Image (cartoon, rainbow, N blue to C red; front, side, top):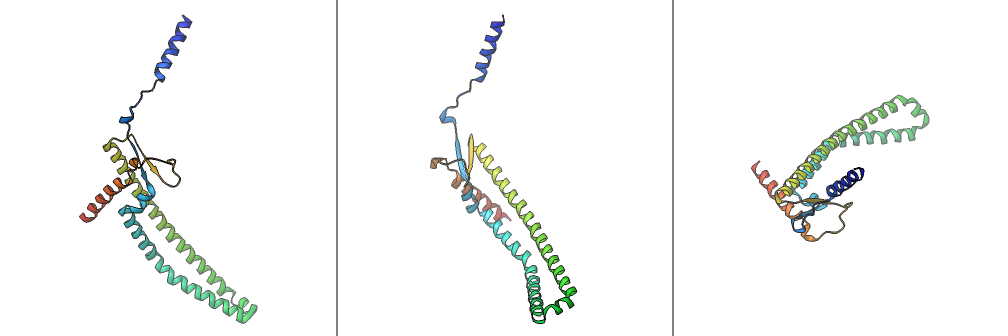
Length: 184
C-alpha cells in the first residue's frame, strides 16, 4: 500500500509539472526603444520646453540678487585688501551680516529649485505612467504576449527589426497628442 501511495504521488507530481506548449505562431512579442520614445514623442518635447521656461522664470529673481551679492562681496574684499586687518576687525559685524544674508539667499534659492525639481519629477513620472498605460493597452488590444522596453542598460541585446514597435507606437502617441492638443 505504501509503495502505491508513493507511486501515485510521483505520478501526480509528474503530471502537474507538465507545461502546456505555446505554438510559435500564437506567441506575439515586441519591444520599444525608450530612448527614441523620449526623444521623439511630441508631448515629452513640449513638456521639456515648458519645464525649461519654468526653470528660467524661477531663476530670474535670483539672478539679480545673486549679482548684487557678488558685487557687494567683491567690494568688501577690495576694501579689506586696501585697508588691511584693522578695517576687517572694525567691520566684523558688517561682514558677518553679509555672510548671513548670502547664506539665507542661497538657502532660499536651493529651496525654490528643490520645489521645482520635485514638481518636475512628479510631472515626468505622470507622463511615463501614462505612456506605460498606453503601451499596456496597446499590447492587450493587439494581442501581444510581451512588450519589452529597451534602453542603454537593457537586457535585450538583439531583436529582429520586425519586433520593434517604437515607430508604430510613437506615431500613434503623437497623433493622439496632436488631436488632444488641438482640442484645447
